[in-house]
Image (cartoon, rainbow over all chains, first blue to last red; front, side, top):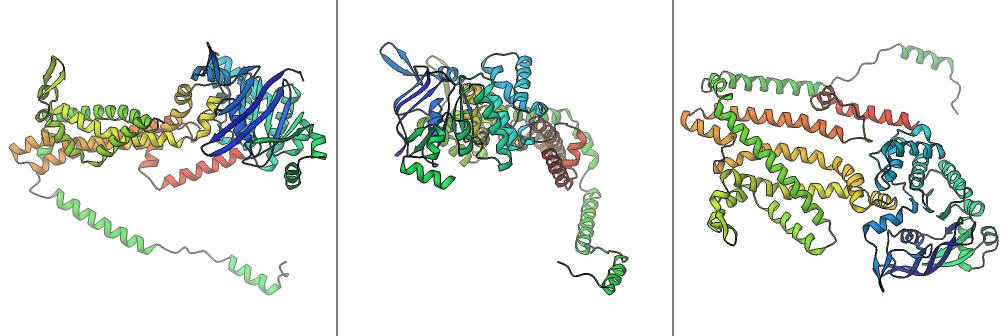
Length: 255
Length: 318
């Protein structure tokens, strides 16, 4: 793990109408680090991830990716919001995996993986499909190359979704409760892929309810509640001795 | 746990197992079917043997050049009105889904007005445009309205603009049927909104949009007949003109109906194939005419094929 911060959130706030979801959140993610975020639902975990790749816009504070402001570009002495193209170009660097997979149902597994490189990066179709094959093999799904999402189990779909995100060669991966929608016996295969990614040195922010994964794979554990980070630390130490009362209450309810 | 069977029970079971099963006979529906069949045959006989219907004349008029020309006009009206309707529908649907209030409201008012008034009234309105705007144009450039909006033009305008309102709702429904996660996923991989619409959202929406659009096109083929009230020279206008001279009213209406039936039947077949083509990922992709016949003519086997599909799917899932 490097010491350079890849992503910094400084005093980030975000509201949906009258509902304040993020209330001045501060977090630093270093290159190669795996940060696991736990906490009760409604605490702003998913919203934070969506802000990181600019699917949602923050109201105040700053998000910095490699020291550059997310969502705005400097024009003279003004900060102008990104246009569609600038936003899209940034999102290539940020891979995201969703709770409900969101695979494109009208495309095969291979096409799901290949379409991003083909359209966004202009990769030739054959090359993109060949690379899709390699990536699907990497997540253990080489033989499902031509299957449609509906023909795959939840665990297989989520692994295709991970391959789809990796196809863009991102610098950071965001996992938004990637295993929450899976049958219990399918959780392991997805966590295994995520574990391998972390070992390979991918920078990851993982919103999860899998405390075991956070303990074994996470470099940093973050407990998020009511729009702020209530506690943060080394996973093993924090899980053994939570300091914050809310962390204690949450952990005792899930463990 | 079941008690061990004594020998008496075993004997009884053995005896029963040698009996034959007799299913209940659906006498009720057999009787109903016989009555329906009897009525049908009687009706057909009455029509076929009716001395007031000159069947031989129908043979003369069905391929009459004027009738065929009328059929041509009807097909042209259908295609042009549907093209205008679909283009307008897409624009109106996108406006209706826009975050901009003005665009959204404008589209809403259009749909409200054009769906809320009879298309026949709209047709007569366009036909009489010259009463309020005798000349149409910008500045010195202007033309006589009656030259610009011919009967054919009025029919196209009325049918196309009316269709636009219906197509708008169909397209909007199709786009809304695609889950929001699809757009999120596409944006997250670096596609722009426009690319996401083109490659991810629209292809999925089309699957929902196409079936009702096919129905609209088939409906349009029949609705063009209202253009006969302004004598737009469509199939019905032409047949009316002929029976006004020959008094073969029923014969020519049957001729017109036969052509409408041919048109709608051909369109249904086309609809089936187009829908199959866009069904990737949802069902088997092999398209055969025999499938069409099985699904549409022998409709009871539809449930059968759905079952087969489910079976196939569960096999794949293991």
